[in-house]
Amino acid sequence: MRLLVTRAQEDGERTAAMLRARGHSLMVAPLLRIEPIAADFGPGPFAAVLTTSANAARAVAAHARLTELRGLPLYTVGRHSAEAARAAGFTAVHSADGDATDLIAMVAQKQAETGAPLLYLAGEDRSVDLAAGLGRRGLTVHTAVVYRAAAAERLPPAAERAIAAGELDGVLHYSRRSAAAFVHCTGTAGLRQRALALAHFCLSAQVADPLTAAGAATVRVAARPDEAALLDLL
Image (tube, rainbow, N blue to C red; front, side, top):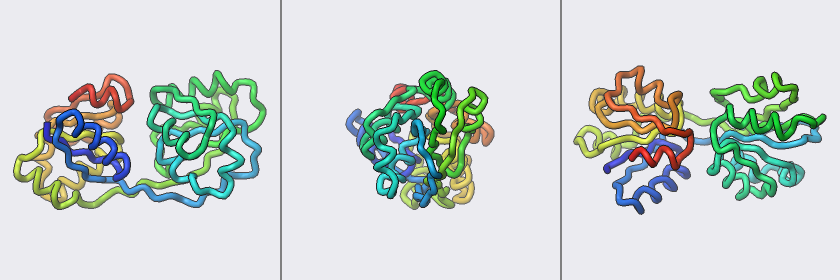
């Protein structure tokens, strides 16, 4: 298949390499730019660290206080974010292999007896309030915003040309924000009708919402909110 990957550059290139190895033709069009934020973690000590994205671990890889966190249990949503945490030096990484709801359930079970707060390394825009979810389970969470995802205003020119010329079969979407940015960018370029006629492969129903609302003809949703399930759709 001839596919467009819309995730941020580093992850987009990794996904593109995987799919090219499977025989697909890939174009990477990053619609989110990840920007680290110099975060104040608060006084601590913390019982554990939480993340819901690989971007969080990357954003704190050079943080002055990372050393004190690396030995703590780190809980995250899936395998990819777990790999990023290990690459940043965290040594006790636990993956919920699911979404934020699965992460809340796992952390509530594993940290039920803790007295110290948990540190959530978060993005500026969050679809799930992890702190509130765990608060309802009796746990205290300190949220430190460590990165933001800035949405693009236009697709790369090569991607616009490919859509206009009918040179793509489908688009892979990994987040609700990037899917919404795709709808916006194709509208700005006067390509929305052509873009929505493509097949759209989405990590979750929430990711698919902006495409469905815009009238996309073919929207397929992964059976589980992880990359392996998304790629199984192809």
